[in-house]
Length: 212
Image 1: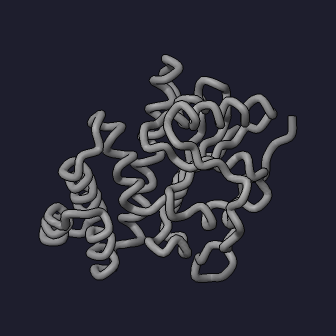
Image 2: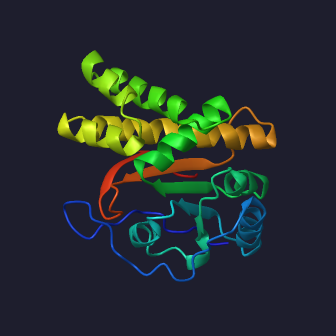
């Protein structure tokens, strides 16, 4: 079994991701199909799963051009792909998504359901923890959408630290879910999370660990 190259690449200093063709990646129509796609991936001897949000397939493929197309699976929104990755012994999961997708993932793991209110609380807490101040945190809490919270962070010059913290919390959420799936204290899967902007062209933040 060969070790996949999971080094990230971008096409320019501004972090725009290569708009590589996403042909060959898997877009499952439900949790069962997502789990089946991961099972097939594991059967082929692959160790890395790349989950991507619906609007960023090209960005995900461009960031990891050396991985086979079969490693790329559209996130199913219910965690079936992640749980299957843990069950089938995959070593690495990389999630590439926009702020709303990452906030939903982090919140769903913490609260069992990803409600808009819970996501807003998470984003407001990130703002406070990154020293954005109570006024900005209140605006973020009342923003209504993760996209609007993202815009507020950007206008306040807080997108970098807040975006990275969102990635950190999401990576932690993924690993906690993987650990629970297999009944272990520690996650069997190393999670990396990449935040991209809403055009799907620019990498904004990244956090995670590499598989051993």
